[in-house]
Image (tube, rainbow, N blue to C red):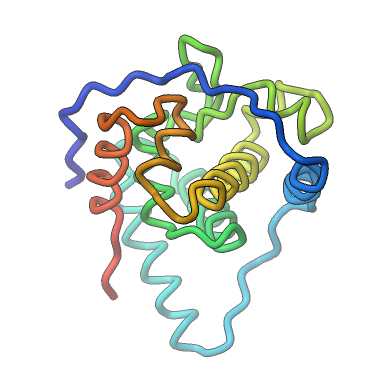
Length: 190
């Protein structure tokens, strides 16, 4: 059973930051790629591990997302987008748990949207300007993982600062601690 963090976490007002054109263009390319392909694996052992992971995570999410097909699609997308951005899948799931409690249409008081609570300005800065798309599962996860990767790189690998920047609460401990705590709930040992 998953424990929900007891820490009250408030979303900060994520800031639109000046960025080099090369960074903006790289992010725009990252979020504009096509939908994820079906996962492929180099070995049967990797495929079996993925299937076991998906089964375990689907079981853990059942209370939050009753429909099995929806859970599987969400897990496929989280796995793909996490790997694509070079992020730990369990960390992304911990972040989603804190940000939206796995609610597709979650909206924060400052306007962040979807599973990963992406601020609408990102759709203008690196996307096509259509902020409504941030409620689409694939789009939201792609933006969220790409933005988190950007912040980790900006903070030279410091997850504490990167998570704070993602949440708009850089330098305050509540949010990074909540994500790191919930990260442990989603770890998988095959």
